[in-house]
Length: 256
Image (cartoon, rainbow, N blue to C red; front, top):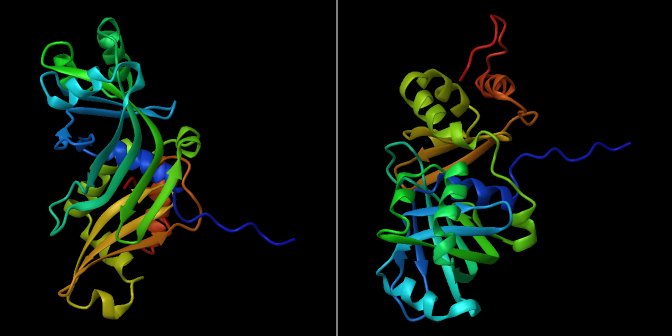
């Protein structure tokens, strides 16, 4: 019997969830208004995203004035690498849907629910200088150097972030600072012409593989190198990374 095709990358929905979890900045755009920055954003399992905006902002006033009908809106999120790269942006995400107010009596309760998954200090401002809004998502688009892909509400609701999402930043910083040899060995899998004279950095790690950022003279290039098998836990992820670097762990398993 033919073997099933090996999965080598996250789905579009998983990429959206992971990018939203990584993003430190987001802008909410409403019809006829300048985009307003959000201090908090959390993409929830139910398929909506909760955002905090300044209480005295025009955006908050517009949504409040729309009542229960809501307002069309787009939230743009920027996923940046946790390293000092020439260009830090890894991906952009646009979430399109309808934004609604959250009743005043439910603001603090919702802030507590958000804090359980996303303990952000700006949640302490909810009810004082900021308010929470709820964006019910119709569709999402994620774009990076490989192109743009879209996913609908149902696809987002059924997906989750990469299981190593919360640990990725620390691993990338550790690889960059302490394991130049591992990066160099992984880079040998790239075409020689691409890496000639280039600076190469670890850009992303997920359960399916590693992405390298190649800072060449002419432009930046992002190259994904898949693992032989998806990683299920931290030990299998560590083994997969070192396998890409040509280290079969004859001397034992070492963490990334």
